[in-house]
Image (tube, rainbow, N blue to C red; front, top):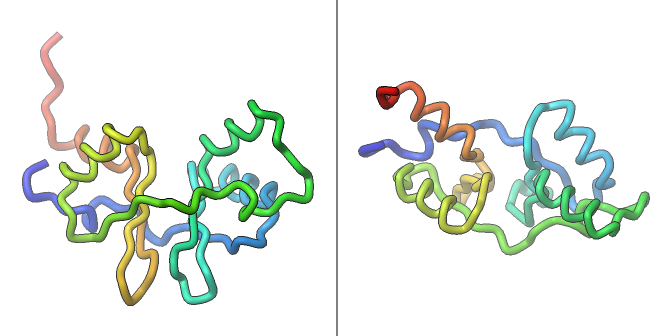
Length: 134
């Protein structure tokens, strides 16, 4: 992963929702789009939080589900982000250390511009690395 930058691997555009989106609508969006997270943004595209499939697992396990709940009730607001010029190796290390599967890619002017996921990194690695001999 030498000198590979996040902007080259990130998924874009990112599926976003507002904080007042019903949580079940966000879950349906994730299922329909085949994605593991939605980014919560304000009207200007600035990051407010993230809601992931893992969040929904915790909600179900703790039986905290409310049928009228909004994304704001369940989203994570202390979100670790990166920018498109970060080295993938650094973000991969961070994801492993923190147990993250999704890291939003942000730009100071444009807001959320992408998402780098463990799937993105795995897909890249599968194309550039020769598998180990069995």
